Length: 216
Image (cartoon, rainbow, N blue to C red):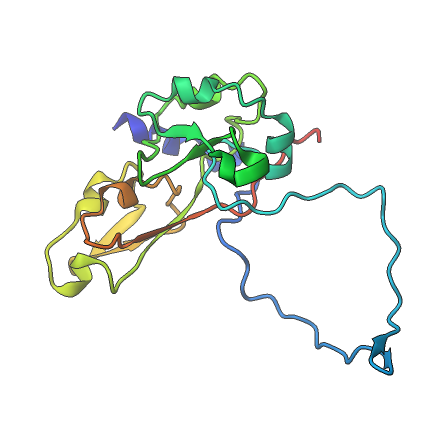
């Protein structure tokens, strides 16, 4: 019950929510044939804007609850490990060296231990650098049920994901088949962590954009 108390916080307290998935419905302008002479492009080269702010590419990892914009997160995170030590479920770990510039920063790997959506979010409270903040909705990403792998979608009684989900109404079961409600899902990963299917039926995707600090 206590893990669901964050839902009582009015949405007006939070800034606009994160972008959970890439936008796929954008209309791309028609492509024009490039100007060339003898196969060599003569298109004008735009000037370099040296005053523009670099934008961090989306990283395919899950940040803990309350993580700010990825560029600001990487700039401010000291890799101190305080959020890792504060997590009572050992759900937060350090990104491995193979991930390059994000190595050592806090991530959640649901296959090992998922976020339990603590009511007081000790990871946020312990963050001295301020890259985990409670003014951002604790949305880490989105889960989806892969129907052809899900036992319940193959006439087997299985409701483990909905029973163990710590967020109210995030997983709905209709006719014995679970479906993720993206309006409520936080991407905590519990459903993936507990899925008993031979090949995990939960696809877990990180948030692709998160709100930044208001003063930045």
